[in-house]
Length: 245
Image (cartoon, rainbow, N blue to C red; front, side, top):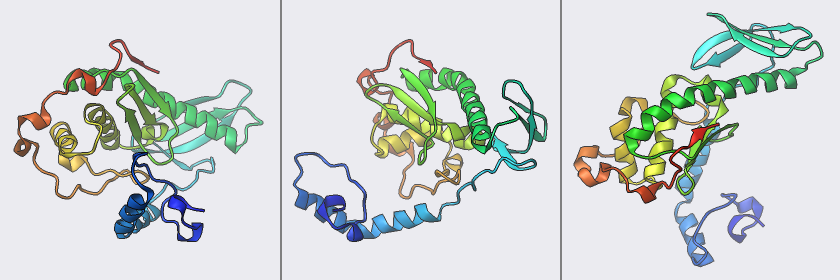
């Protein structure tokens, strides 16, 4: 059986989150009423531009903070290493390293680039929004650039952010902090995004480093001071001395 007790051939959603007390018939009716929108969003996801799989060949294009570099692989009986020149990304691996090992070494390097960029962002956003992160994780994520768990103060960032332009990094970081302040994507959340991130920058979407404009969003000033007021402490019960990994 598929989602909501329907046969898999008829299934539109793999899963759906709903309150345990909500009757199954009510959930079914809600999904049916949103079928057009659901299928439209699924089509958009399927048509998104995706980075083609890397083969780790010499002169292959790789990116750091949105800038293109040509890969140059060398093999030596020494510890793996990654370095940059103005136009090239040098990857040193052991003589018996295969494509999977090359990918592991480069992924670890990308992860470290994101970790190294975290402290400066913490210094900017924590005092700006009046919250503190308990822990910042950097990991591979298939469908998101980042996420936040307000209850624990944990922020997760996608390793692939190191490949994107600074605008995508700033958007993901800002969204994570705004979710710490306002867990739901309501008008207050939109007001915070509009306040702390200029609208022309807020256009990214996963897979293509762009996002559609948010229809119907309003100027934060029109929502009144309460819409953009600093959150109470309960909005993000994070540790006071949290440090990124």
